[in-house]
Structures are given as C-alpha cells and as structure tokens.
Amino acid sequence: MAISLSPEQQKAIEEQKANCPFCKIVKGDIPAKKVYEDDQVQAILDINPAAKGHLLVMPKEHYPIMPLIADKTFEHLASITRELCLAEHDGLLVPGSTVFIANGAAAGQQSQHFLLHIIPREENDVLRMLTPPEKSIENKEKIQKLHTDLRNNFGIMMRNHLKRMGKPLPPETSPEKLVALIEANPPLLELALNKPEEFKQMAQKHPQLSPLFKGKNIDEILALLQKKHEKKEKSGKPVLSTEKEQNETNHDNSHHDMGNDNKNAEDDGEDKVSLDDIARLVGGK
Ligand SMILES: [Zn+2]
Figure 1 (tube, rainbow, N blue to C red):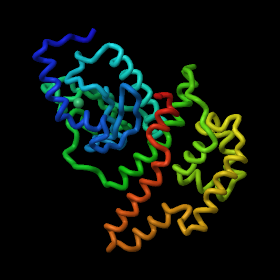
Figure 2 (figure 1 turned 120 degrees about the vertical axis):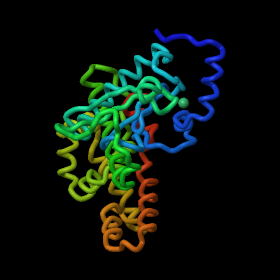
Figure 3 (figure 1 turned 180 degrees about the vertical axis):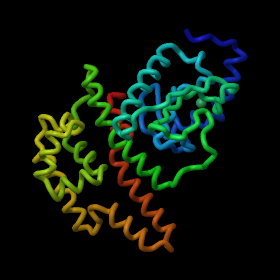
Figure 4 (figure 1 turned 90 degrees about the horizontal axis):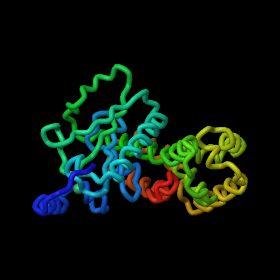
C-alpha cells in the first residue's frame, strides 16, 4: 500500500514538481526521446546511458519515492516495465537486462521524480552496476538511429506481445497508417518500392509484420505508397534520402553543421508516425 502524506509533505512535493525536469518532459516542455507513453506511464532513452538502449520508465505523476506511488499506478508501471524489457530483448537482440530502482537519495536516486531503469545487458559486458560511466551524451547520430529503431519496432512488437498474452489488441491500423509505418522504416520502404513481390511475401510471413498486414490488401497499400513516392520524385524530393545524405556527410566533413541540419530535417520526416500513433498501436490509448 502506498503511504499517505501530511499537508507539509504534500506542499513540498508541489514545490518539487514545479522544477522537475521529468514533469516538464511529461508536459512536453523539455524534449526527450520517448519510446513509450500512455495516460499513466512514459519511457524515455536515458541521456547518459549506462548501455545502448538504457531506458527510464516513470509514472507521469510526480512521486518522489517508490512508497508514495499509488497502488494502481505502481502495478501499471511494473507491467509496462515487463513489456518494455521484452521489447528491448526482441528489438535490440540482447540476452538480458538489468532493471533497477534507486529508491531515495541514499540509494543513489538522482532525480526527485521516481523512475526505474532498464539497462540492456550482454554476456560478460563490463558494466559495473550502480556506477554508470562518467560520459556525456553518446554520438548524436547513434542515439537518433537507436531512437528510430526502437520507435519503429516497439509498436509492432508490443502488438505481437499483446496477442501472445491473449490481451485485447488495439484497433486495426488503416492502410494510410501502414504506409506511414513503412515510410518510417527505410529498409522496409526500399523493399516495398523496389521489390514489391518480396515485400508482399515478407509482410505475410515475417513474424512481426504479418499480424499488422493480416487481412489487409497489400497491393492497395503498395499502390498508395508508389503513388505517394512518384509525387515526391516529381517534386524533386529524394525518395530514399537516408543513404544519399549519409554519403554526402561522409564525403564532406567540412559541412558538418549542414549535415546536422539535414539530420534534423530527416527527423521531422520520421515523425510522420507520431508517438500518439505508436501509443495507439501498442494499446496505450
Ligand atoms: Zn516530476
């Protein structure tokens, strides 16, 4: 059972909330790499990761320490943590993960907003737990790629997982949404545009894709996609910008800043599949 608070403690929490970076992330006032979100819980990539894919999972409501968390919220937090561990296991192909909670400052809790860490682990990695390495943000592009990979895969994997668990699935995805999902995943997009027959086979057989495309008219989806990208080509916008831009960046290091601008423009494109879409896909909303 969650413990209850005195009026003074309640007041202290209200003051914490006003300056809490994680509360600001919840409200959207501070940007973060969110990989999961529903009405009660959000998960973001840690900006100072102890390992690739290090996630912070937290209640959206500000709770300074674990014993204050409302029972229902805690149950939900635990259940989502379990789903995210599985999603990381499947998505990052890591054999295990460390889930840890620093409950209170004495235990190393660094933020005043209670959160839980999921750290993907490899066999014999040299990660010394509870002493994360002192390094700042990893290479920005790597983080962006990781964020995209996780975001693209979580919706599909969570849906499959819900199915395996016999839980109710979120509403079926529309052809337009499937087009957006394909577009958000460059290798899939390339296959769909250039090798539609191979794409069709994969969409029907791939363990993660087939549930999404089951019962769908894949020809119709491919036609929609082709049509959209014909238009883009005519308007001079590259269809598969990723590789080209990467090559440009590689050959021209003097324009590093420009490369970053391109990267940002690319991000905007990827956001066609919004967090809301993913949340709906995984059944959060
Ligand atoms: Zn907070």
